[in-house]
Image 1 (spheres, helix red, strand yellow):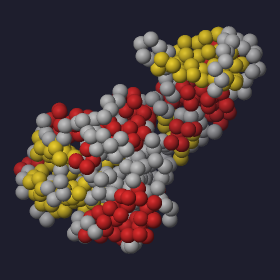
Image 2 (image 1 turned 120 degrees about the vertical axis):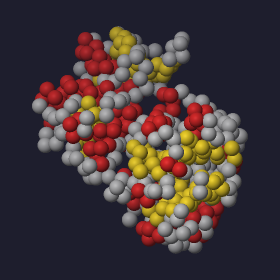
Image 3 (image 1 turned 135 degrees about the vertical axis):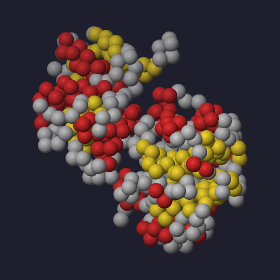
Image 4 (image 1 turned 90 degrees about the vertical axis):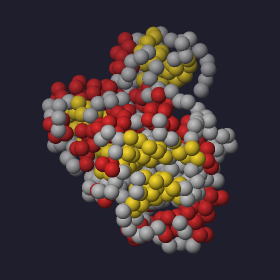
Length: 87
Length: 398
């Protein structure tokens, strides 16, 4: 996976939220950003990794640009998803 | 609430879903997890059941197209990982469109923690044996009450979640006297040490399984060592340890005999329609001949009327009509394809050509079971994701 910086238009923090909330909120946010721009979603649910992959394949106007895993200062695992609006 | 009544509600517990499945109720299981998770760990039933996998994000993205795939004739039970997405599909999508639909409360996490105890009728009146079925993972655990009024009990292969066993212990006022693992498990996390701490009863394991086969590191858990031929007196009955290396080096089966009743707790050796695989210690070729001797020259020579109570099942339909997973040695010789007569070299070749995938978490689970690793609850759930693959793969090939 490329480590080049991604120009992020909007950020969505869904830490602590369980599915389906991250994807429902991400869908709402994607609809609000201009075509071609990227939404960054910060989640704590490990299930979000496969779910965002599957969702991006299903949805017509979304490209999953990258997924990252990191840890916040309290040791909480974070799953970060970058989504581009295509249309 | 009865399970049928429960179908009129919008939330089902794992116990209620199990009851519906066991009765063969006509329903559609709508699994809304992603395809990968569904493929790796679907809910199973011993009756034919209609299963549908439509990930919940299809309902988010194109609800009308997704809903068009959901049949209307039967009630729907929606399932997901933890119960959130399936509840959303039921409440926001299905019910408003007039479907009869309920959500599996707690999702696969709750299903994975559900245990169903069943009495083994042959044991009465000498013993009371509860077989605890963990349907999600195909694991079987045992509570054996013995002695006057059946007030004493031993636990064989206790699971990670002890609530179901402790509930029986409370209800029937049992005193646990021994806790035994037939071997150091690779597919599930044992509750043996925790149960020993709670009850004060000693916890037993064969010392050969006190060494991690891949790490070659010794156990850090407290345990008493079993050995071949060791006999525990359970009032008038005898429980004998049979060391049967093959699946693991310290693998054992436990032979219970009293007042004409004979049971073999076979752990991971003989299952109902298959046998345990020899390769989870990373030494399949070296251990297969041991496995052959243990199975054919030891266990199959036990009295033909011995009732075998295994540590796993592969398919729910292996259960008898009464729901118990059990068969006599005579029946197993007849119907278990892996126990048909073969020479040692035929058997070794047969086994090594029938090995399913080796789940990499099995190495880690063995670390947990001998104390080399203390997982968080979340990681323990992750390790126990999916059904056990302790048996040879091709039992259902025919």
